[in-house]
Image (cartoon, one colour):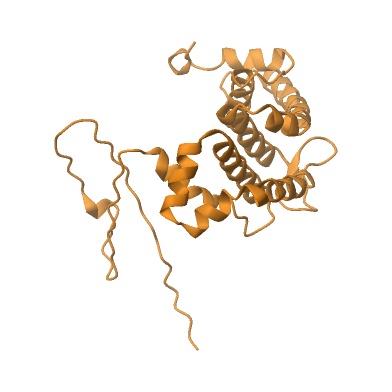
Length: 238
């Protein structure tokens, strides 16, 4: 049997209509010259439903890598929050009779599922606070930032004290690692008189900003203050 080298590609383009009128799109940009084409146009007057419909897919982890697990934890935590706090959405889901959504929002299994995912995710955090992409791999600054952003965004989005408590130690240990890494990087920058903001620094500063916005306690940091001064004025919003 010969396996085809073709792979299904899905290209999307969002559009927003806030008043009566027309919008014109160049479909060639999202549908290149190929033989097999299929166009789907989806419209909703409540964009938040697009997020809810995507939750079942995100909530399942096909691999036990740190990105898959943190995304699944994020999606399941949002679903749990919606199930507890928004009865109208839950009622609508029941009326849709969507098996995937009904399973996701099943209150009898959602806490168990999330506890299991959080346990698997926690096993990928190393003793120095860094996160590994896969179990057994070295800790990665990039992976640590990605997981930290996910946890902080979750805290900010649902503002649930129970979830914040679950995330507290993971977040604190992540910041401990990133603070030390940033201290080393800033020292090298000062030594080399490097006056431009490195790529990793924006993510680090972003994590600190989300932490502050979500009420997460973080230590003041002279290295963060030094990096912040290097951010061009046109990119800063007070």
